[in-house]
Length: 95
Image (cartoon, rainbow, N blue to C red; front, side):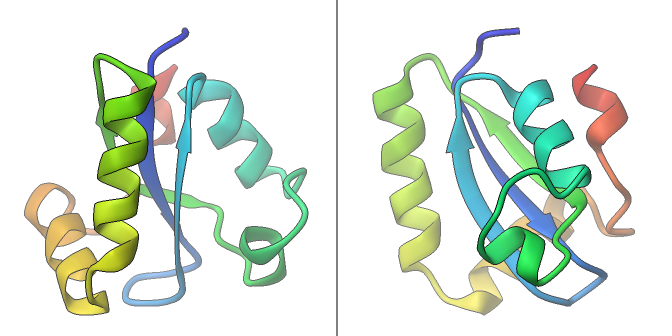
């Protein structure tokens, strides 16, 4: 699946949040879940896909990622809660 996507991973409900962008959501989600991505997400155990948004172009996805990263934590939490109030792992919806 090649589809520009912005996503957020968390280590638990209301825990640490990692925001990223990819052109291959299932592959990238697998990498996060298995700890194959070294850095922030693996250091803090961000393995739960709690939010994602598909885009038509990578430019649109990158613009949206910057908007989300530039926003407050409260806005990120509200965005997650608006579509995933139970903070369930959305990985299965990608594959």
